[in-house]
Image (cartoon, rainbow, N blue to C red):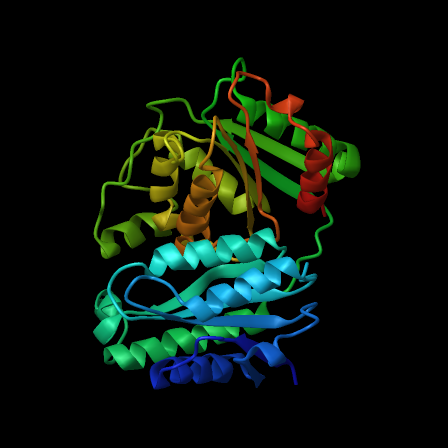
Length: 352
């Protein structure tokens, strides 16, 4: 029987222990619980990993962060591993902030995460109040179901073996001045050299004003439109995006750093995807990000993609999902030291 490796250096509460147990039941796996430094795994390859965090009142788990720091210094090998995250919070704040930070750090070390990899429990399970509109049971019962489901999905995670890569590239950049788009085109060029006719690329340019932001329909209304592969809004670019996402294997998000956020147009696109993930399976579709900043903040943009697309919409997060660079003059990113090696490595990771 497969083993579920649970890493929880700061484990303190009975509630988090129950959540871990419920994940293991859903996974149908034997449980290997790791709480102290002496038990930290030496080999992570091929493992199903569950990180369980006790989030304190200032938004941290110091034992877990010490583990993460030591892990980064050890150059771990996560080849073939898949991961998810449990979080038991002491307040109504910080849970998503910590989750995307932890996932970004682990992903930057080479660890992939399943789509919708997080189950969080806030005080009194207040975050599950909305779930009660759609699922029967009390909040603790719903939390148990969510943990069971997380365990099952983690147990089923595997790397897809593709014969052909259908890649979607989405941006709203100007090719004449954009470091980010130029860098992306270099990545695609290297990828094409590797895959040849096995690669099919669709590039979608989202011009300003060509997509409206989410209207905030009710769940029932959104589902009704989604079942028809449509949205409340019609006549903009989203119909094309909906069809393209359904057919693609992976999406590259081209994200210049705008004040430490992604562009409003791309954010509107993500917001409009609520109908897609309710009707189209996204957990086997990969996301990648190419991020260029004028100074700092590339990690902030990458974590927005993790938050909106992996945690929320359910796309799979592959290892090393983001290529992050700094370039403060138009079309200067290719002068960055070592950029050619990083482009090659990133293209290789996207490849079959």
